[in-house]
Image 1: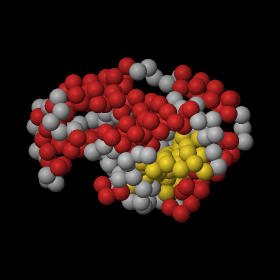
Image 2: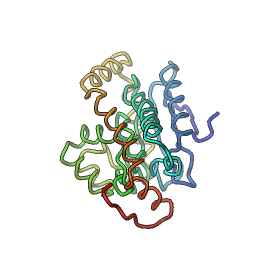
Image 3: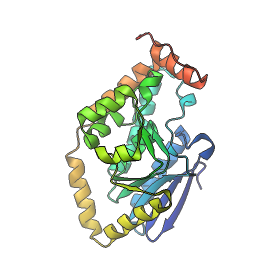
Image 4: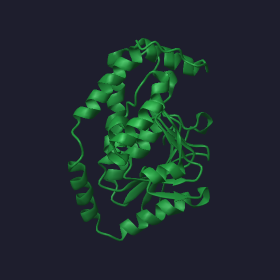
Length: 257
């Protein structure tokens, strides 16, 4: 049914598999739009009570956005694209049914942002998290500047964003980025167990609780500013140099322009 996703329903749980293993499940635009359609299906199907998102293979949840799609964009195009992906991630965050990110391997850039949009994150011991965008002369554009601070606090978020450091699952657990740490073999079962416990509670009450929680989230202004700044960054000299260097597999030479 989908080109870049695999889906399966088990015991009222929709399992969504990001299926681009040859490129570490990099998030191209087509995959992200397909993900938006799946989230609509999740909401509409009364037989489905929750979902988990996982990456295919054992190397990556999602290793970030597909950089090749970003080069050559105008500021307006980049801002529009950022807002379109943010809309998909907002739909995940605002789902009335719980969605868990099962993180196996790398969750970087847009992949880390996707995990943060989910209601919970469970990671295996081989998981790695990070927002490396500043290495490319960019900034997170899919809600990362907003959600990371909400989850781990402003100080930690600033450190991770300006250093672009990658952290392991143990560190992610320590700072509260993930809810549980498991072995790779136990990852999916742990997510299913959490969801099955939730299914024993009132679906209406859960939906209302999530709705109330979302009412306390920051306004959209921060996300809109992020998207606008993403457009500025992608067309800056540093942005062009950073993305080109990434694709050419060399170290960028930034000038601050």
